[in-house]
Amino acid sequence: MRYTYLLINTLTVFFPVVLSFDKKVHFYKTWKFIWPGMGITGLFFLFWDVLFTVKGVWSFNPHYIIGITFFGLPLEEILFFLTVPFACVFIYACLNYYIKWQIDNRLTRMISNLIIMLCILVLIFHYDRIYPAIAFSLLLVLMLLLQYVFKASWLNRYYMAYLVALIPFYMVNGILTSIPVVMYNNNENMGKRIGTIPIEDHFYLMALLVMNIGFFEYFKAKNKPL
Image 1 (cartoon, rainbow, N blue to C red):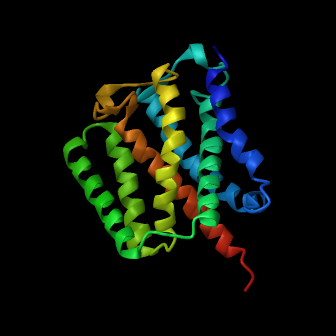
Image 2: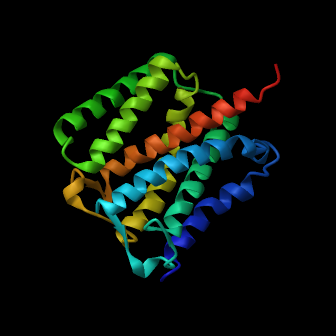
């Protein structure tokens, strides 16, 4: 069905938008802090997406998209960088409100260090494949900056949000990669998957989510009254 990818995008964002008006979380009041970060992050990832499409790292099944493209990207793929980050930041905001427990700072640093070491190992063994080379390089830089340069106090909350975000991620990405709507060139990735989802996609999500939450926290803090 040509509307498959568009329908997936719509369902991804439908419930977060509706539940944004929950009387407790009041997520709609923070929308203005989301848009700038989504714009900055979205432009970065769209450039990445165009590059990967041109290089044949992935492609899109014409049977499941409506056929409107910009710079070789389906409209649905562009919308992906609005719907998925919005849904993930919604998860982050809800967890911040409803769950007061948070990961200890020492454990947060350990998790960051494990991710940093994993990135380095992947880059050593898979530097010659475009997807892991770009994905893990970006994540390595982000983790080093956030943990040791900016010392982001929200990283512990981010890791919790990421784990919860994996649930809709497996649902959405599972559909996209099993039909498939998005097709991957195994010559440009590590060739390992969880189900039908390439391993790299998990760390792609990690980078996408941490950038959006980072900007969300930055713009929210910037607008706090002195």
